[in-house]
Every structure is written in C-alpha cells, then in structure tokens.
Amino acid sequence: MIHIKSASEVKKIRQACRIVAEVLERMRDWVAPGVTTVELNQKAEALILRRGGIPSFKGYPPGSPYPFPAVICTSVNEELVHGIPGPRVLKEGDIISIDVGAIYDGYHGDAGITLPVGEVSEEARRLLEVTEGALYAGIAQARAGNRVGDISAAIQNFVESRGYNVVREYTGHGIGRQMHEDPQIPNHGEPGRGPLLRPGMTLAIETMVLAGDWRVRTLENHWTVVPVDGKLTAYFEHTVLVRDGEAEILTRWGE
Ligand code: MG
View (tube, protein in one colour):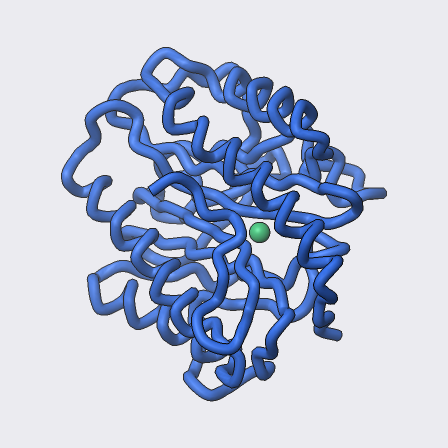
C-alpha cells in the first residue's frame, strides 16, 4: 500500500532528510586518501546523533540473523551497494559510494552519493556523471500524474544510451514511517506503467549503474553487493516529495 503523507509527516521526513544531506555534504571533506571507511562511519554516526537523529541502517532488518552492522554503507570501486565500513584504507583513484539513513521523530530520510577519492580515472569520472545524471533524469519524472514506470524508463534510457547498464535486482522505494515502503522504483521499466504518482508521496529514488554486465552477487559477509564481472559501479540516491509539477528534493546537498 502506498502511503500519502500529511503535512506534519512531511515535516518530520524533511528533518530526517536534512540530517542525511548534511552527513553527505560533510563526506566531501572527509573522504580522502588515507582515510578508513570505519572512520567515515564514526563521523556519520556522531553527526546524526548530534542533530537529534537515529541511524536507521544499524541493526537492519530487525530480527535478521545478519543485521547490518554499521551506520552507513561504504562501497568501494566495483562494490555496488551495502558495503560494510571497516579497516579498508581509501587510496587515490578509488571511488566510494556512501549510503546514509536517519530517523527523526519516527520518520526516515535516505540518500547516497559516489565520491572520487583524490584524482580518479576518466572512466570513473564519467561513470559518476552518468549515475548522478540518471538520478536527476528519474527525479524529473517524479511528478503527480506520472507513473513509477516513467521514472524507471527515464533512468534506464539515460544510462543505456550512454553505454552503461542499470541494476535489475535492487530498486528505489517509498519511504516514511518505514525505510522501505511501497512502491518499489526499479532502474528499468516502461513509461506509463506501474503505480500512479500522487502529491504527498515520498520516494527514495536510487540509481545503481554498472560499467559492465548487470549481474550481481552478494559477498560472504551477507551484505556487500558486487557485479559478477568485477567491473566498476556507482550509486546515487535522493529522497523526494512528489507534488504537482517538479518534485522537491528533500535530501539536496550543497551544489
Ligand atoms: Mg534507499
């Protein structure tokens, strides 16, 4: 069931999203050669708590034998999503995807970016540009009266016309009282298909893009998703509010 948010619910989601956006903005300074992914995790946790938020990924999903053990996901180079922070030291030329979630007064915000570590290859830079561009192409379709398939098709067309592939096994999602609500928002689809978008829906739109084949697998740590062919991947995500006309990006970080 798709939940239309009231104004007071949107207010709380907006606050959760501000916390997430601030963490991502700070990541631009924190991510550098020589930094470990667990240091990024500690900094994110401290900032979320300082802003009155609760990290939403730690311990997710409840009741699982393998709950996610950290506050953020850090996925380096070929790792697509759900990488676990640890002792890995970032080095010049890496790219790192960072996914951040926070709860404020019972409501969720969720967003992510892929950042270059120092100077990166032309190939990596282009992958980041395409993955971020696809996110904004998808968001441009997230307007009342359109359907989820319009978002998905825009993402897929943007990515495939530039010679890359979109993920098939993971999707964006509705968000609010739960981190993952209906509808699912795939990175591929048909225009005019799927659930109708209405004002007051809050959606976490995510683009997950692969330089090679779209087939992925999960590592033995039960979380980290990597492409089977080991090629470079990237990911971006925003939480947005659907309105008449353009969606409001609730997790917008500094331009
Ligand atoms: Mg998400």
